[in-house]
Amino acid sequence: MIGYMLTNGKGYYISKDKFNGKFVSIGNKRWGCKWIEYNRIENVLRNSLSKNLRDNFYIIEVEMNNDELKDTVDYIVSGKANKDKYISDNNNSTCKNLDIDKIKQEISIPIKSDELDKIKKDVNLFSDTLKDLRKRKQELLDLQSEVDKEISDIYHYIELNNLNAYQGWLMYKMLQYRLKRRRVIKDELSIIKHLVKCNINTQSLSEIQDMIKNMDNRKYTPRVLSDLFK
Image (tube, rainbow, N blue to C red; front, side):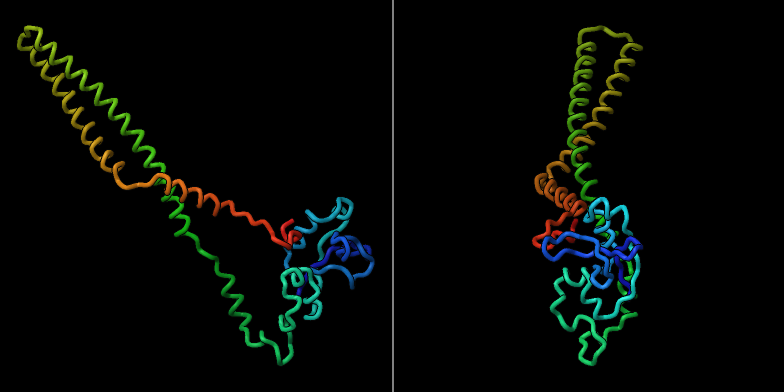
């Protein structure tokens, strides 16, 4: 199996001090720390070494046998160090019947989150639509009030003035235009009022949006193995 170590290319390797838990350089490859996962050793290189070590050490690949695997940092911190049957070639291995090729094929398939992403977008869209509807409702009420005032003005003008045929026709067209406009406003307002009156709990909707935000920005505070998250 391929593993990884940190070296300066001059016979020194990174090891972990058993007493203070810090990473230090050591002149014996045998006692150098080994990792299985590249992202973990890369994280150590970037975040857990002193500046002097970080500037002089780099990652190399190393061949590891099963016994060496049990001494890797990944293996130890994972809590599997006390499981004697983690990987073994002997006849008592609990892993001897695993179909490695099948497992590799399975884990190579991307995990699809299309439906989850769609739900997230739909929730946000629904929330935005609800806000827009409430805003539009107030706009329509203001427009209806304005048109009602214009209609009232036309009625009073007709009432207080003697109009000839042409003037009467103009007043009729002005009134008709505003009545039609008022009808369009009232129809749209009627639909929006029914939508807004639906049993939509805005607090629950807000909680769902907060939950989605937490999903997208999920963080974990380690309970014990804080070195893994440095």
